[in-house]
Length: 102
Image (cartoon, rainbow, N blue to C red; front, side):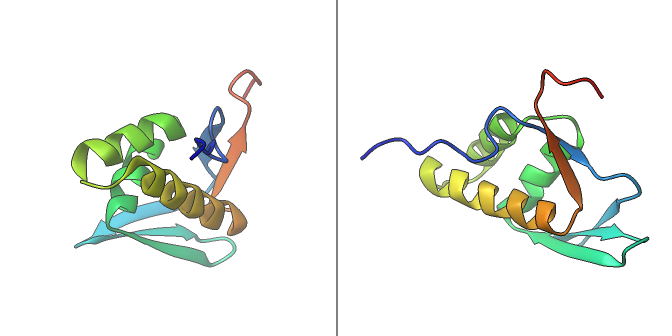
C-alpha cells in the first residue's frame, strides 16, 4: 500500500475574513455572517479546527487529532482532507502556499 499525500499538505490554512466560530457543547459552529454560510464540526474535526485557527498547519492539525484519538493515520488524513475541502467549498477558509506573502 502506498502512502497517500494529503490534499492540503504543505498549505497554509486561514479562516476566511469575517468568519466567526463558537463551540456549543460537542460541536463547533463556523459562520460567515455576510453570506449566511455555516458549517458544524464534530468529533475529531473539533481538534483539527481548533489547531488550525490557532495557526497550525494541516500536518500539525493531523498530529493533534492522532494524539487525542485512537484512529489510523490514513483515516485521519482522509477525514481532515474532507473537512478542509468542505470548509473551502463553503468559503469558510482560505489556502495559500506557505511561502507566499499575506
